[in-house]
Image (cartoon, rainbow, N blue to C red; front, top):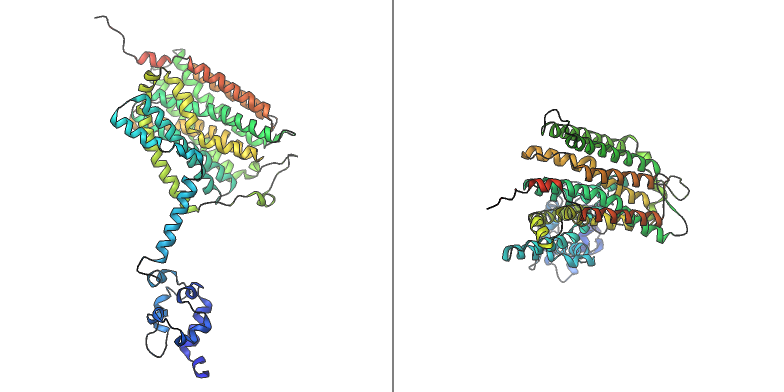
Length: 483
């Protein structure tokens, strides 16, 4: 027995097992002592592939098991641990996929609306009834937009809070940008302009108002606080966006263009480039230069550092890789439904007797902002108002400073004359909305009454667009001729 203990192969075996992964024990079914007394076991079939000869030397097969000298077993154990019904890793992968689908697809009651998406495609192929196709596509996109926000939040758990807020705003606006690109391909410039404008109005009035209202009801005994400098920077960017939209509209309305029909478009493209540079500078300012400016504050207005809020950090429910995969799947499915939605807008307007402006400014953004709406309200009810502002106001800033100029550049590349002339009525509504929200944010506090006022303002805006006749739409109509 002493001779066996001193056997070089056995010594190497012990050293390998002690240094290697514990997975070898679960595979072979032996512990270190059991390996020495292996002949006493009844079932030695797993060891047959390990023994190279009757001397019991493990060295050659162990060299095959080790992928390198570091003692990593995993790559070659995939080939070792197999059975007639499939590999261990295949079963683990199957369980992972099932758990991921259960978490993402079946964890929200809003996902009951998902079947309306395929149903919209079926109705379009069978009946081509634009009213039903539009309605079903609208209902089908709602849970997809919400799940897109959920997957983004899960991915944000693996990044910092600032990058997480940027991810939330970016993928939260993915639905609007996808719809806008499909509308540009169809030459529906006014739908693009009005849907992007409606996204800004919805985020600033409806989403932020609901968040303030819900958070104020939960914390009714005290006002909620947020970082005032952050809100001031976003308000300044929104005012800059208003300026960029106002000048082309005034130039068109006053007929003071140097070259009629060309100067307006040239100014829009030049201004779009400036706005994209400004937004890129804002990202550098936010993520690199002045990161301390975006530290959340507590009830006393003091900064909350990351080590003080570690207890509030939520554990992600899916992995980083799963989050990226789900973001890809959801974005692709939203793209498919967006095409049917855009193609049915004009027919739905006629079938339901609803102005296209109301559909573009009110209905489409409410669907696209489902992710921001749910996330902003949830964070406000948890007294994380800085994240709420990052989602609602940050999303409005991104649409105005990046989404709109980006669509102008995309239209330029497509040969579509997309400009920043949103017409005087729409530009005036945006200007007043930015002023109202800026006044609401100047104190650095919120309560349920401020939220209620923002919601009521949005209802006024919705009513205004319901009775608004788009002058561009009238000009596009062919003149009636008497037979």
